[in-house]
Image (cartoon, rainbow, N blue to C red; front, side):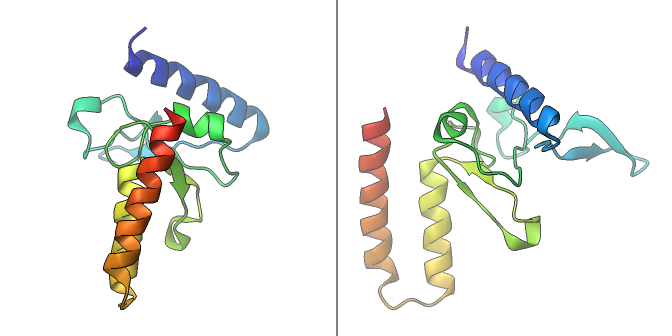
Length: 134
């Protein structure tokens, strides 16, 4: 099985489990009429991974589940999740690289005087964690 097929199979299993618990993690896709369809919305930022689904749910993913999910930004294997208040506080899987970029963006937005130092340290910590997980 290819990586893409493994991700699709993992996604199918997770969705089935979530459906049993009433915690569906797929966002409906709107058609031209504005009606929601049952299929999931593909990511436009991951053209090389058109099969990628936009994951997110209220219940946190386990570490095993996270590693089987694609990053919602680029489709790479996820490393952690992020929650956004305006997005319903859904746990969204993201890769280590995008986690670092989100942290950097927030530190800069908050005008942290030590932002660059903190970002460099966090990047190094995440690289070490990523290497340890592999």
